[in-house]
Length: 121
Image (cartoon, rainbow, N blue to C red):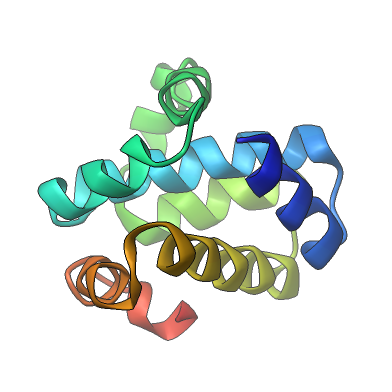
């Protein structure tokens, strides 16, 4: 997890605490919306990912009010102070990291199998 946090912080120019929260939010979204077996394979390759997902979903009441899907993820990331350019940078770096961990084919299946995600690939 530290490797991924460091990559996001430096590439997207964000604070490491924000990077960690962002990872939890995005992985939680992928777990809920993407192809579960492929997403779980990715999560299994990132030590600390489960804890980040759990921490990001702790404000469940607020999240439920916003609904689900990609728009809710965007809203949550903007609430962390990220703009659209930073969100796109974070997404691209997460996808690169995923390709390094589980391979381009499996990461491609996650991207294509998750509604709305291909626009960030």
